[in-house]
Image 1 (cartoon, one colour):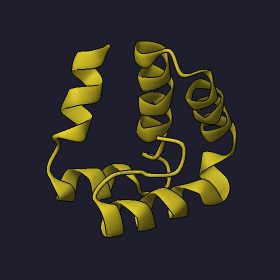
Image 2 (cartoon, one colour):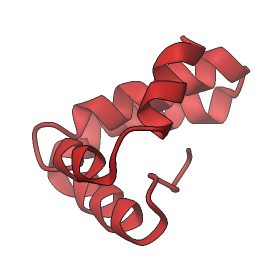
Image 3 (tube, one colour):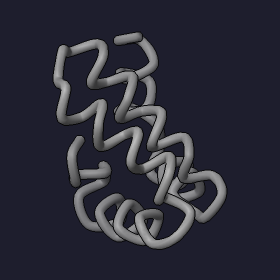
Image 4 (tube, rainbow, N blue to C red):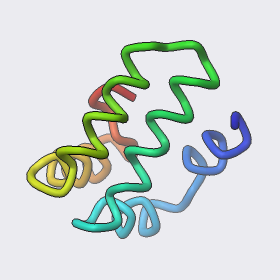
Length: 77
């Protein structure tokens, strides 16, 4: 699991931006769940599950903006 988190953290910026687009943002939701499980962070697991449920509506936009600004999804990650 930590390998997936490390791979996502080290992915190129263009790939992170593509994965933050609507429909593909599910990858960042899974990233949050896996990162939470790998590092024992319950809040991150809950945020990832909420991202899976609500990500298609508006949360993808938050991921996109945070990736462009900070090069990583910062909200709950």
